[in-house]
Length: 123
Image (cartoon, rainbow, N blue to C red; front, side, top):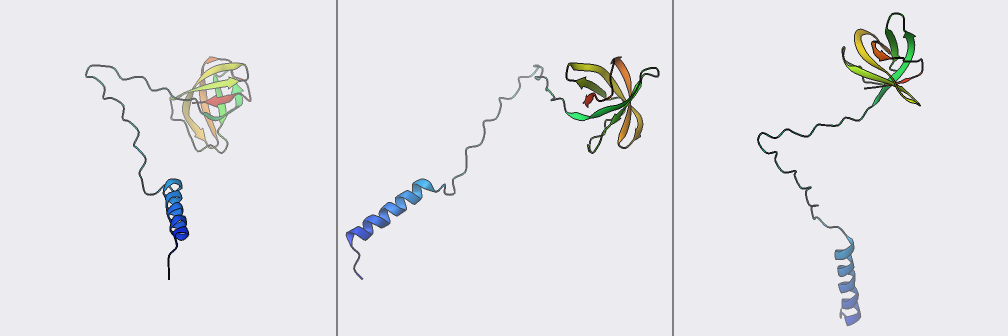
């Protein structure tokens, strides 16, 4: 079988296109590591993103606590953990989770503010 120059040209072009278009086995460059902290320097504070954990189901303002409905959330706050109640206008209260827990409800003491039924609770 005789190989013509047209066939060689087509094979060469196909190989070149495959080389350019296919990613191959090359590894991506690793992300640069941050510079090590200098000794004696304080590390930058870690910012946490507020995450919703439930909503206020019952408010007992006279007794100073609320019941937080966790719904189907897998997160259960630790006793003493600070929680924040918010509505569309902003933060309404700071809460402190208590040890009284009966899924899906968690009791929380009102530290400050005036929470209302339906406020979202964030950690």
